[in-house]
Each structure stands twice: as structure tokens, then as C-alpha cells.
Length: 53
Image (cartoon, rainbow, N blue to C red):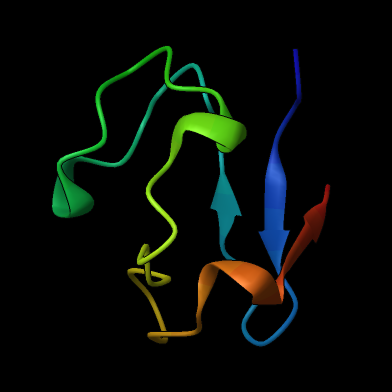
């Protein structure tokens, strides 16, 4: 089970407990299960630009 992930560009935190409503990511969605085409909802950075928070 992975934890929260932080955007290296803007600092946005993806929290798997909350999901991301702007990206239609349901709560309890682990980072591995977030689609590869996910973009940071704050700055638009690609999923690969996130690191463990």
C-alpha cells in the first residue's frame, strides 16, 4: 500500500484516502491504480513528476 504522493513541480499532494474528484479518481485509489495519463490538478504535471510525500 503506497502513501501520499507529492508533485515535484508545485507541491500538490495526492492522498489515496481522498482520491481526486477533479480527475475522477475515487477515494481509496492507490497511486499504482491511478491512470498513467493522470495530470496534477494544480499545475498539469504528468504522473511521472510525483514522488512519495
